[in-house]
Image (cartoon, rainbow over all chains, first blue to last red; front, side, top):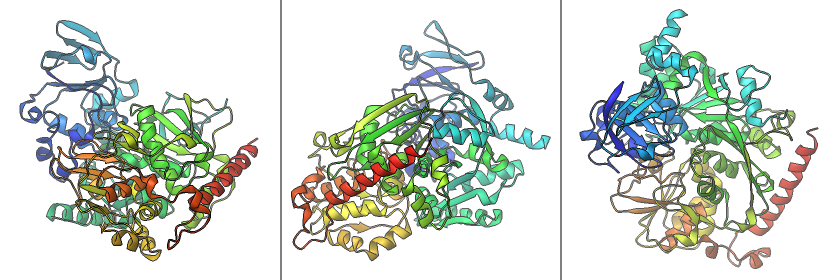
Length: 160
Length: 462
């Protein structure tokens, strides 16, 4: 169970605001301090482990840069809920073990409210209400249960 | 049951007779490409952690294009690591500062119809101009490909986008894509965009590449164009032997099922400009005309090929860039720079006041020289204008065709390029003192050729 506060954003949160190009040569820890600063200057400093990012359509649109998802995870974000995801961001997030869940009811969530997310059961609780969300696709569950793509590959290589 | 080209390629790569949209398949990778930013520096430590080697170095292409040329010790170290890793892995296809990755795949003869390709860059979709499937992925997934030679994908439904007719002078593929960003939106994840129609058939490979490149801005898995004589000619020009038969095999069936078919009339399109901070904020140039600019940028995989430099030169010939504007030109490959030097294009650009930049992703990726300060405004022939994309988060970027960028550089504000082009009536005779070709005649003849080509290939299908 993931529990924290929500950080609410609109449609089209792109990879340039998540991981700005001019900081891409820096190590992840340094890059992450600029995550979302163009639209939410307090985010990187104030986000706490377990907090949940809630977005609208095409969350993560833009570049293939994995640092967009990695920066959120590094800052402690527990899950990203969005009405829809850009395809590469969605894959990157799951591969890195950052739960990304399609959440059509995103507009019913307020910024800064308490939220609980159970990505395995497909359950979201916020503002005294409970929402059912689409479960993670079955073919990805093995990888996610292994802890992401890297541990999954390790297991696969060990089997030979 | 009829299949789209995308479904045929995925079926072959997955070792199945047929696949259906929505189905999840594991596909064998024919070609994997990544660059200095997404590639070795991120994949090497992961491969070491796994104790694994590259599954097949002959299927890997590496391009150093993001941090070139090095501007500080950090970028120099990234480039050094890339060179050393490529050497250690025995990867022969390595382009070090030779051009932008998507352009190098074409120039290097790596693309052919029917291939299933993956790239460590979102604009990998550009390769689809060659009738192959190519999608972008992140570094961890690319590590997976390096280890296994495979990747899972959900078979995308195909959306057919048809353009028919002849563009007005000054309207090009870039205007098509900006218009599509507005009309189709950017939320087309898990879809393939297949472009067709007589307008597309009449386009050069360079212009077709604009359509497939910016399938990424539509949010699509991939963009693809059925191969024809233009495709085969380009492949042969890159020194690769290919049989005509490949252009007949790798096509969508006449009864293929599309999720949607969108039809457009090319003659109705006017130059488009996307306002800050999204390609989807596009509209006719009139809507943005007059907005003051500080910088004009001709660059990137999508917007600095030889044909793009020709467009800019046609507008800038005998004219000067506005005093308060800097016009930066970063050709998309070393070969582009060489060709533009030989045919006089570079001289035309620099005489107008353009600053020639190194080949590479440069300011488009917010990494190289030419980035923007807070409050500055740029018009760019690139593909993205998100907040913070080209430098400071409080800079603004407009997107337009090379024609529009060049016209804006002269005016000092966003400007309609059409008034800088030769009037159509005057086209039949060469302009006094000018060597510009009659674009009207060029348009008409390529259009007729495109129609014939389309008929020929369609007719030979059954």
